[in-house]
Image 1 (tube, rainbow, N blue to C red):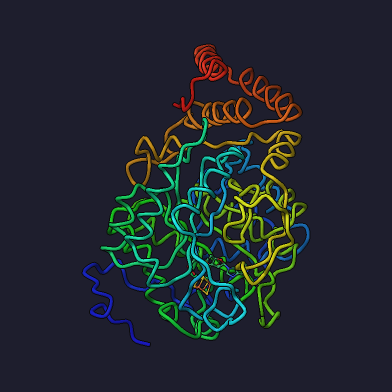
Image 2 (tube, rainbow, N blue to C red):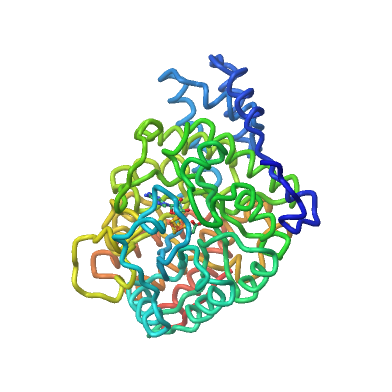
Length: 476
Ligand code: SAM
Ligand code: SF4
């Protein structure tokens, strides 16, 4: 297909498709059998917080021996410690509606799935869902929608405003992210005005022939419209975007290269990379019928995460409850910085008290981590991870080109860790059981005494005390 700027109403040459299949394949061909020295030099570059080139990424992908794979995993672990420390940001997805006019063969919501129970939450139901999420302690949501005329930009903006407006007890949602269909520039502007955090769109597969094979109907058939979608978001002023690939549709090596290419495209054009990268693996869904040839094994999944961590040191990596607890626990060490907790995918399920089996006709796919938010927080604390509900940067306008979390020396120490401590303190005061309270205050004490900065330590202790006295929403 020949790309036509007129068709996409493109006035900016940045918004042309930038994935070159041959270029990616060539890099993967010319970097086979890398030496140990080459791999070590690339890891060192990344540990110096520099993004990797496509060629360097391909070299890491082609490092197949157990010894080299261990070096890469170790490098990713060290990088994660160096850049992100022990914080893990928590969020929850909220499915608003599953009407969909696309026919993506892997998804339970696809238009050809006649078994799907189609449902869209009405406003009262959205409020109930959010109250239930707030009662669990959530502060950050991602709203998810099928692609349908009923979910137009005005509707999406309406649901975002509605979500911010729900306050129950000390509960409130402070950041609403979106995972929905690509929009035109005006549509993105409408959604931005509602005050969204990140707009996420996954390309699913960057390999265009495979894309054509799995996207059989609806607007999503158009590979280029989707590929350039987040450029339109940038044009509309949304500088906080999330990219992703659905692993299992095509060769993981190609997809990792393309994700890095996509990140480099944003850096080159907008001076800021994507805020997050997601890498879901295909899970069972209602009537799923997919060739398993490219399904990603657990060992490969760990490699994918470690390579992405090294290739794009500054980009948040998101791992969802599609993966079982033991995989989540393992890969967190290699670079994941955000996870969902207490996730329910069935539409309307947060407000329902009965604990039914997952009903695949009402969900997009199976989830494999059914732990509650409280259980996840307790396990994070047991492993000395610092759970964070921080939303400070986005609310203070510290996003995009104007601000890079990591370009400011000492930023994590001065802002991220203190904010994680303050949001965890709120969680402990408002929602934690006795066990989590004890473990939470212990970790907080440990973190504060590690600060090595008497003024900062004093200031954090004062704020924690205020939270204990009933103040909320304190941040740096
Ligand atoms: N309808 C919007 C779209 O397609 O962009 C919203 C996204 S969809 C509700 C969220 C993501 O779930 C998709 O982009 C896809 O990557 C992922 N997904 C779909 N089916 C899946 C499956 N069977 N297993 C795992 N992830 C799946
Ligand atoms: Fe619809 Fe998105 Fe599912 Fe495709 S992945 S069928 S667009 S909900």
